[in-house]
Image 1 (cartoon, one colour):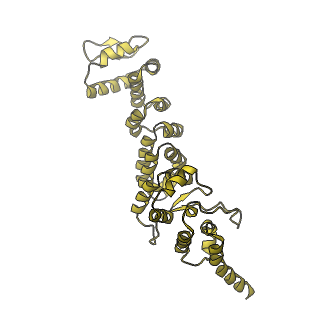
Image 2: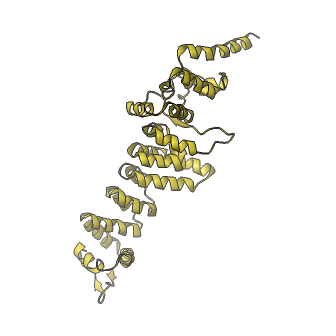
Image 3: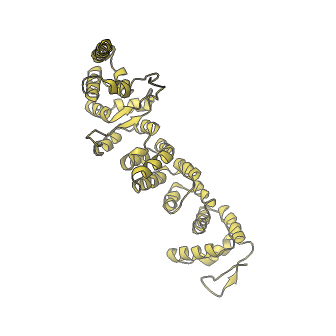
Length: 308
């Protein structure tokens, strides 16, 4: 059986089974840094069966004892037991998450219980990568980021500010419940290569009533500016055809004249092949007469080209 040199007095054997009272009597009198160091040494020295017994005992205790159980799991790199983190408070998760490598399932659970801590971790890991490695990270973590944004607006806005590529279509809809905050962030994002303004793509289809109310509460000029940065994602293609086209729901909130002006700005005043395929949701958001005025010249050009 493994033994441990207690902080005070001669070495004594570990009791069997290990108890919470024994642990407190040996460690709680120490100042915090020394207690942590002693607990870490102790945790690493335990035999597997002794550690399992102690962890089970602590896990059934009060919040402080569960915190100690988590600390011991971290010192022993007990990845399976680190899932206990999901039962901790958001503050505890924020303290421990930067020190751990939780499995994907644990991170997904924490996105619901401690979204701010998960957002900070995602943003740090995103910033630590570049190129294809960063793209792979985005593909692997966008679902978790969506859960974060849907659970906690501030956490989602942190992602938009520090790791915008992680903000997918559903997450964008959730963040648009706070349109003034979104506008403030996207205004500060540097232009994309070629000088194009960055675009936040939200899920196509009707916007939730809460989003509509929040957006319509913006001053008219800010709503028009928001539309410049936020656009409905294209409908998934079916072969060469777009499938059913849903009007850009954010554009629909603008008055008709402002809506036409916004679409003309996107298309450069003329609909071409690329516009037809990528911005048809914007064209569909126009009033019928405005839509016809924009589309008829393009259709005439296509007919003339086909007759030659």
